[in-house]
Image (tube, rainbow, N blue to C red; front, side, top):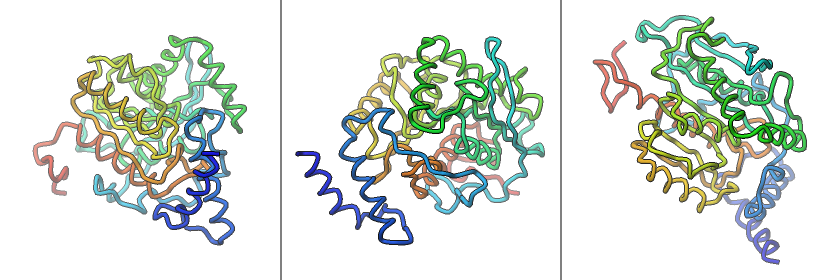
Length: 337
C-alpha cells in the first residue's frame, strides 16, 4: 500500500520535473514518467534483475556529448583525429575482445606519451556504450581501452543473459575476477596489445567503469595497481571494507544517481570508507532526478544532460590530477598556443 501511495505521489511530481526528458508526444512523455516512478518505488529492493531494459542504439547514432557544458570542465576545442578498433588479447590461455581508441598524431606537449584510460563495462558485457566512451576519451587525448571481463563473443542482449554472464564470472572467485580486470589494465602498458598502436604514459593511467564495471574499476585503486585516478558512474559499492591506505594517493570520483539502488545511505557509507582509507582527493556527485544507468545511451532511462555533465566532470577531475606544465596553473589548466 505504501508503494502505491509513493507511485501516485511520484506521478504528480514528475511531469513538472526540470530533469524530465523532452519527448515528441504526451503519450511518450507519460510512458517515460510511469517507468521512472515504477523504478523509484522499487528502489529499496533493487538488484541486477530489476535494472531498466536496453534500447537500440549505436555509437554512430547522433549523440553530442558536448551539448551540455559543465562548470567543472569545458571539454576540448579542436579534437584530434582518432583510430578505433576491436582487439583480441589473451588471459590465462583464453581469448578476450576489447576495444581500443587513440589519437593518430603524437602530441608534442606530451613527450612521454598520452594518458591512458581503461574502461570497465556494465554487466551486459562490452557494448556500444563503452565503445563510444572509448572514442570520446580518445578525442580528449587519451589512449583508451575498453576491457572484456567475460570472454570473446560473450555478450548479453537481455537481463537474463546478463545475470548469467556475471554469475558465471563471480562463480570463478574473486582472484579470477581481479586477474581479468588487471589483464585489461595491462593492455595499456608495455607489452600489452595497445602498446603496439600508441605510446601511453604509464604514470598517467586512469580507470572508469559503469554499474558492475565500477567495482572492477575501483579494484584497480584498492589493489594498488598504479592507476592515477578513478571515476565511476552509477556504481555498485562492493568490498568497501577492503578500502585501505594503499589507495590514499589515487584520486577517486563517484557519480551517483539520486534514485540509484544503493540510496543515499550507501553513498554516505562509501564516503565514510573513503575517509577511513585516508584518500587525499575524492568527491561524490549526485545527479537529481536520475536513475541507475543514467549515463548509458543504450539504457532506457538515459539522461543526456547528466551524462554529458558527469563525463565533462570526469575529464576535468583527471586533468587536475596530472602534473602541471610550467605554463599552467590550477586556475586555467591551459597553455598559450
